[in-house]
Length: 349
Image (cartoon, rainbow, N blue to C red; front, side, top):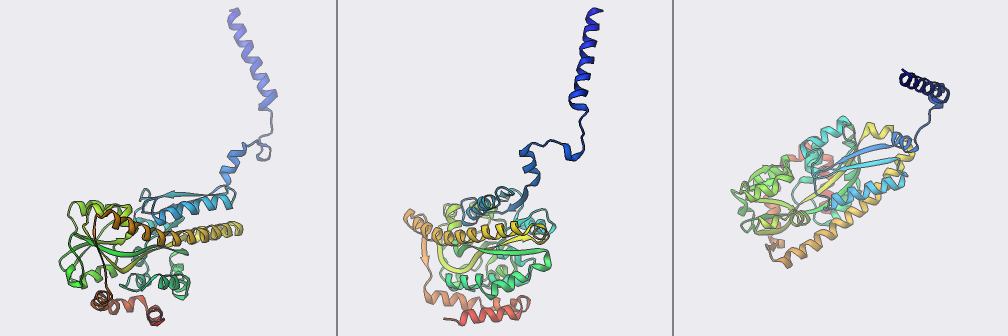
């Protein structure tokens, strides 16, 4: 009994102490005591940035650079969470996810965006860019501004153009002339323009995810593919393709997009920080893409793992002429204003 009485007395004294020390506090919100780290966490703005390529590609490295710059410029108020290699969304799902607000940022290839907004198909036209100077004119000129304006109707805000580089053809047979592609099953980014481009050459286009590409080539599900040199190198496509034709027939680029509703809710200073960070990351990306494609082209030649053919001027003109019907077919859906600007681009210099 004495033991029970001692325990009861101990509990009673504990309750009295608790009331005196803690239970009697004013728990109105203004009197609560917060942990400083928890307070910072609750104020942090999260940007989910999803993309589909490897971290060591120009786009992957630029996204990581952007994330670091945003953290620095906002003193940690904004956290860019990066999801590479289709770990969160694929090419098919990332655009709807951005439009709905599930994601805040993406950087899809032009080809993927053209399925939602037809005007963007203009950048998929074969031989639309003659060289890197044409690319810069489009990205930073009137054509780029016109394309950005088309995003507004889909709750998207165009922020920047990023480069990967000119696309080349790879195969297990030499591809020197347009007729050499006849009957080939060629993997492409799903795009109406790219489909028509290769059908015009009597090839069989097969749209698929970038992450499925190596396996499709290894299993013989497709015979050929088109890609930038940096993608051929980093994805080791040279292990499953014997020939490369340096054709520069299409350009693989990306548009960095934000959800417009999300952007509208950001404070003005945060918007400025993001724009500054993105401008720096864009310069980094575009310089890196050019240098990587050049350096990795030299590596491929030194490795001697593929037979590489560089298209001559005469061959290039033959391909351009063979693909002219693609321009005629898509001009109405792209719009005459954009097609006029492309014509002016081609007539310059």
